[in-house]
Amino acid sequence: MEFKDLIKRNRSYRRFRQDHMIDMDTLKELVDFARLSASSGNIQGLKFLLSVDTQKNSKIFKHLKWAYYLKNWDGPGEGERPAGYIIILGDTEIHSTIEVDVGIAAQSILLGAVERGLGGCMIGSLNRPGLRKDLKIPMKYQIPLVIALGEPGEEIILEQVDETGNIQYWRDKNDVHHVPKRSLDEIVLYC
Amino acid sequence: MEFKDLIKRNRSYRRFRQDHMIDMDTLKELVDFARLSASSGNIQGLKFLLSVDTQKNSKIFKHLKWAYYLKNWDGPGEGERPAGYIIILGDTEIHSTIEVDVGIAAQSILLGAVERGLGGCMIGSLNRPGLRKDLKIPMKYQIPLVIALGEPGEEIILEQVDETGNIQYWRDKNDVHHVPKRSLDEIVLYC
Image (cartoon, rainbow over all chains, first blue to last red):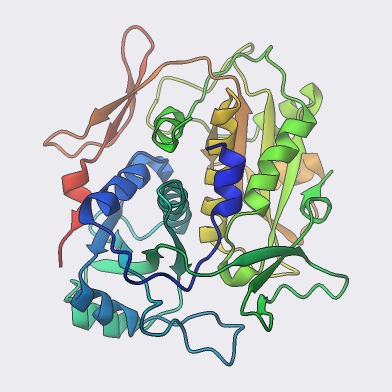
């Protein structure tokens, strides 16, 4: 697949075909893409906690906050939830977490997922103490980001941000998810 | 190209074939990949300053710090310097910079560059006040990262981090660059 197509198809999916399972080998392959990606000072201070197990998935799911702008939606219902998770951890024994590294790793993981017919969402809004407790994540690990993964079960359309400058995503009456993106002209500067 | 090959070929290149020019359209295409990538809360607070001009490239180059671990190397010499730059800026009128977004954008840009036969390096160690002054970058923009780009002019080999845990990259007597990476077993956790 051309990289441009991979980028376009890599949307933030929040509804999945939950019965489409993911196996552990696939998650490891995705983490390997993160492993081989750049790290600030080559420090490689990130760790990756994986889940494809129904019970463990439920433990993770309940601590996640979904789609801030969709006030009338509490997140994916039973049947449309993620089939797996990659939780990105920062190993403070190596370094305090470098957020740029988190973004690099997460993008490598999600682009690789799209190539495999999967998709996902980076979730930074979560109940960290609750997740730590339920999964027994040692205190030496920070929890910068959770990546939810599965076979996408929703349509997402990119729009252009209009003159109001509103960047909030929204859903239409057919439950299609729309995401306004700023134009190239707006974000490229010539100093 | 398979995504795995893109990931493997996307190394942090610091020496280039400087006479291989990059055109502005290519840089815009790469920024478009960043534009279409995820942004925390879809806020899209990043801007991108582009350079393919020899004079402007020189102004940028002199503020960059190269390869921290190579104490006897002051950075690429004339003839092996980057042919272009994408400077990632954070627009504080939109939001204080979200570092995860910087990593996502930078990774999209570099993977796209590799598909085009280019390569580059994310540089976070730089003289920000000097760069701001020379390029007249307004104070409302933070300068989280500079991406140097060009046709790669060096060989880079990935190694496995050995039992000493040393992650410092090094160059052998043939000037080949070696980068130790932690193993998948070391970075995948099972809680």
